[in-house]
Length: 256
Image (tube, rainbow, N blue to C red; front, side, top):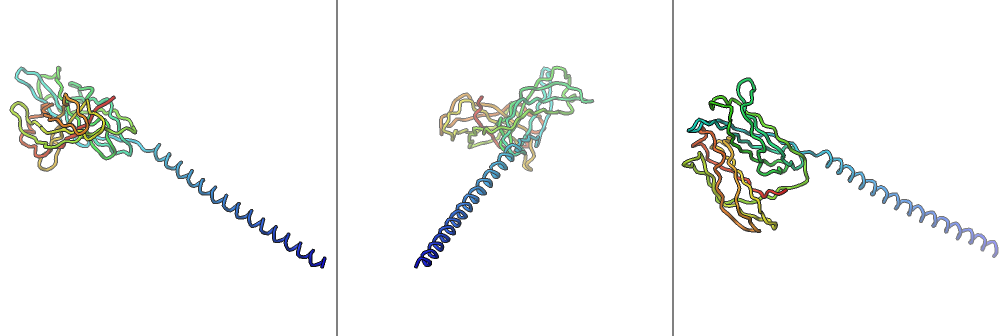
């Protein structure tokens, strides 16, 4: 009887030890799995942060046109238009833009500074328009302008532009300007639009870029508010007259 009790006690003790070891093993295995999952989550988060840090904006000139003209009192004006695109992975904030009108031997005939892009924040894969006209004081003939160069300052940003919608857009030949673009701009955003800027890219029947017209409207728009617009600046080179068959308009609300 005592021998049986002793054996039974040893068996019960052994079973308890085994059960405890099994419980400890199970606990250790669960902790190990949680630790592995946490490490994988942390690694994934670190990889995403590295990718975010490596993502950058990259702005390139997609298409550009330029020209020069002399008015009735012999003043010479240069005009420049461009489509710029963000080929990078982050939004691009456009800063200072300078256009240089050049002559033979890379001489500088005149410059146009503080040229505005519309919009001033370009999302990856999207475009913005540039358009400017500048009096060239040192030029005596339009033929002196043989080339242009442009410098575009930009930075990567996390901001997005407050884009507006346009409808009923038409391009017509003007009586004093080569083209006039008209239409309606509407604010689909909850925030009021109080500094509305627009630009129209003109294209011929083959999709070739002809030039940019830009401007603004002098009213504010609440959500769903609408207003008409008319764009005719800058005066484009005479050789684009009669060629425009398509127009693409960008409209946004500028803010500090």
